[in-house]
Length: 262
Image (cartoon, rainbow, N blue to C red; front, side, top):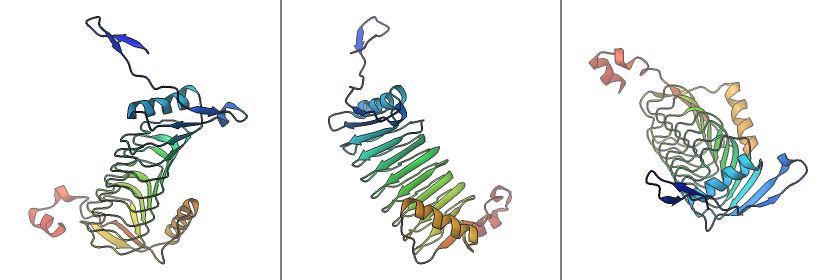
């Protein structure tokens, strides 16, 4: 174990991830794969092992077994690689990533893929609220349902939901697109600034300054291509929602005009 010394000169052990992965090299080093069991590891140890394999060993394909729904796993990965997580994640999983392709075979909790920059995240089951919060790029795909405020403050990228979405989906959407194959709760697209939301099911209610728009051939091509990539069945028809742009100049409106907008 590595030893650090604090300001008083006292020895202080520094926790390091045990080397628990089983490596398999196929051909050149870029074809290396690794598998490790996370059942007995802490969150810190799991993340350290991921970093060691990806950055130090140059492994391009890592499988994590038995994650135990721990929080904050697979965060801050800034490399092109493939990560398979066999099981479920807790809160804040796969946040701050830039480049990896991550496949979660179970469920995920709140705020998965928060501030994701690029790459792909595919979740086979359901996701909690705030899925893809402040998403900036890449694809976040949830084959099941998502909770409230999915894509809040989204700034780019695409969120695809195979099932239903909760209330305030697309709240403060700034840029990017959301594809909801099922039904959506109340307040859809509330205070959205730009971007587009596609819904295949029923919409409970629209939020402030969210309006329905006509679909064009570019929309049809985009939807067909994205769903084909991830093997998601398309609904019978789509509805498209965009910003009504009444809030763009909200600060310049008179008090009486602001009441009309809201």
